[in-house]
Length: 314
Image (cartoon, rainbow, N blue to C red; front, side, top):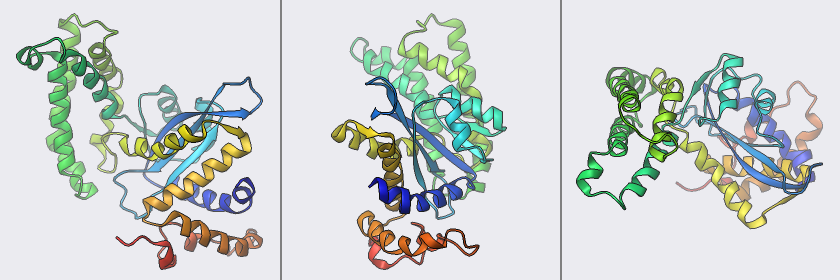
């Protein structure tokens, strides 16, 4: 696997990376993993970062890239996204915002993360409050307001980017304005413990307001980062089975293999047959890498030139 990734699959990975950096929106997330021999003490955490094309992207190129790194620092973003000029969608982790400011990128937040704290709070409150008390609670009102925002945005999901942008500005923005005005009023007038789930939900909303508003400016930007969380899940499921990766080379090979497999699935391909096809075609291309005519466009998971044997029947 390591040898195949280094010699063959890395060519596809690098070609896909060039494509993803051209997209108007990239969504990003990361998860931990253990690597036995990475030059540090046993048990140290490494990270598998994931970058995907925007959920609303209509270019026909669905790309999911995994990238192994020993740290979770801003330096990794600087290395991987140095040439990027679009919008970066992420959760509230500060390095994403720091990097976006350095690069003068638009930075979009995740309403799902905002909502999650209130969901946790209402689960706990249901045990102690009556139905009427629950409906009058801050957490219930917060969720009702966020749900209204989501419901409207979901209703425009199948529409064009232009339609979504216009309706967000005209119809959704007043609801978002009202939500943040309401949150600030609760913080001023209500004695909510700041360390409670409700308090943290209100605090998250205020501190992330700038980023949570970004989706209103562009119809290409998703309201949350759920698509990226879904993209990272197969790696998390695999991690439960193999638990640890032995070497840095193995972690890098895993990142490449997962990228190709998940991008293949996102483009309605059969992963096994696609890998088989790549291993048939890539050896013919390796010697051509330095030629000016070298191209892997016809081998990309979204290529119309791939054989039918690689495609799933819709």
